[in-house]
Amino acid sequence: MSQELPLIRLRGVTKVYGEGVLAFQALKGVDLDIARGDFVAIMGPSGSGKSTAMNTLGCLDRPTTGEYLFQGVHVESLTRDQRALLRRRYFGFVFQGFNLLARTSAQENVELPLLYRGETAHARHTAAARALESVGLKGWEHHTPAELSGGQQQRVAIARAIVTEPAVLLADEPTGNLDTHRSLEIMELIWRLNHERGITVLMVTHEADMAAYARRIVRFVDGVVDSDAPNAHPAGLRIASVEPAPVATAEGS
Ligand SMILES: Nc1ncnc2c1ncn2[C@@H]1O[C@H](COP(=O)(O)OP(=O)(O)O)[C@@H](O)[C@H]1O
Ligand SMILES: [Mg+2]
Image (cartoon, rainbow, N blue to C red; front, side, top):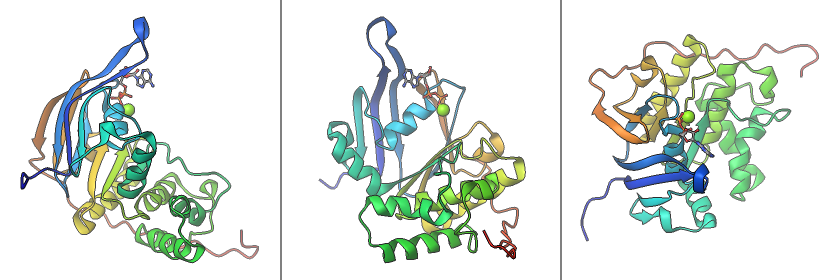
């Protein structure tokens, strides 16, 4: 009974999309253990199964065969509704394209996961304001995505991901749409979430500069884990990510 399980354990996980002659096996037997507090960069060529693995890990999708143990719970045998509950309780997601609701303020975007949880308006306002402040966006609460830079939009998305205080942050190419400086700012923010709050981070990236922030690098090739090693020279904080408050305009916005 006292057998130590990691936070996440995948064993022999396969994923087949489609059926019959159209069937495609995106994962071909993935074994992966992730300890609480780890920061894993997932790398590998396009089409190697990284996003499929992330969707499986985040309980968005189910393995075709194999085991997924999250804190000892067999995720592969949960119903869709049970998986949704697990997802909302333990996981935060950040995507390459930010995936914010347009024409909806930063504040409202960040409140959304709390709305799904049935939190009161007061609790939602307080938690969202705090999350936005923690990503350096105090003063930007009422701006819509179109009024924010790409880096700021990704910060809003990160605030939305952490407002529920998830155990795990899943980020699929979070800097893929950003220039180098904005990318480094996002990486330092993610680094802080891992080092200062203990959030377990799984992040897909193509870029070595971004993977450098991780504690461990897992490389996928053709639907399997090809290599898995500690990051010998992890990057720390290098730039000051200071976000100036917006300049108030006469007509407001
Ligand atoms: N919903 C889907 N239906 C059919 N094939 C898919 C689907 N999603 C991904 N694939 C295929 O599975 C393989 C792995 O995709 P993916 O996990 O997105 O790779 P990566 O993120 O490493 O680029 C690709 O060949 C892709 O075309
Ligand atoms: Mg992908």
